[in-house]
Amino acid sequence: MTLPRTMKAARITRYGTPDAVVIEERPLPQPGPGEVLVQLRAAPVTAGDARVRSGKVPRGFGLLLRLAMGWSRPRNPPGWAFAGVDCATGRRVFGIAGLRGGAHAEYLAVKAAQALPLPEGLSFEEGAAFFFGGLTAAEYLIDKCALKAGDRLLVNGATGAVGSAALQIGRALGAQVTAVCSAANHGLARRLGADGVIDYRSQPVTGQFDVVLDVIGTLPAPQGLLAPGGRLGLISADLAATLAAAFRPRVFAGPSGEGLARMQRLIGLYTQGAYRPVVGESLPFAELPRAHAIAETFHKPGNLVVVMPA
Ligand SMILES: NC(=O)c1ccc[n+]([C@@H]2O[C@H](COP(=O)([O-])OP(=O)(O)OC[C@H]3O[C@@H](n4cnc5c(N)ncnc54)[C@H](OP(=O)(O)O)[C@@H]3O)[C@@H](O)[C@H]2O)c1
Image (cartoon, rainbow, N blue to C red; front, side, top):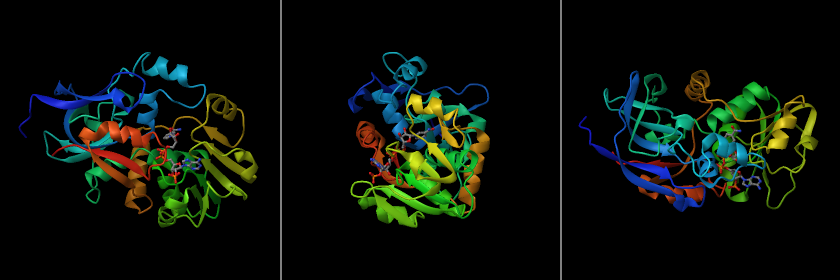
């Protein structure tokens, strides 16, 4: 593959509105020892990207965000996950750039072990959408909430990146799944495995559940929805609720992990037919600021991806 000398890459100029995302001409990254250079073909623009760019995080986490990511703007370049082509071998690969970022660009240098083979049945867009949402849903349902066959599962925020994965994995594990989302997304929720649907705009969320996954953090009293012995996953908890969860049995909060073992497990779920990423919308990479504006509404179906030129 003949490589250009420069590429287009995104940078966040400040914590603020989507116009804080700019695309600039930059030198190509130079892969270090043990790294590969990937020509990126697609990358997700996630709720996490929108939160880091805007600085709007659940209550109590603002100071921690700035201490970890940068005081006046995020230090690292944006872009958490990727799908593309290994420039040396031509293989289709996908993976996670993580907090180091850099996947909102045309090329990315990553550790060779982080560029996993993209399964043949997945497009670049699906590869980009694969890990964000899927990893969180799998960890909360399987490791934290120990979901099992026959459990009644409630997913609040059911059709976005995390919820669309939780519905599928919940269904595959044999749970009876109830999805909370707006009426416009009820068809999608049912296709992904929901047995029952609730429109949060016109109906109260009631019932008794063995596992409640509050993905979007809007349930006013999620504990009241738990059956005896029920488990609660608070995926968007504020700092106080995150700290309190550490002292409460069967209540789980906090960031999910992204290690290789968890990535391989999710690929295994895909191979078994238990999970397939949902790509709601694909936009050209040049429209990255618009993608940020969509992501920060918290109403997108599945994952939103930007597509880089081949
Ligand atoms: N803890 C972690 O490690 C972790 C990891 C990933 C994400 N997160 C957090 O999880 C949250 C969701 O992320 P995501 O990527 O899935 O977001 P998303 O793709 O924007 O999806 C949001 C979902 O919430 C629904 N929704 C919006 N307002 C709602 C309300 N008032 N009541 C019930 N449902 C509502 C939307 O459905 P409609 O469009 O039909 O309204 C949509 O299904 C974000 O806060 C994100 O920061 C945390």
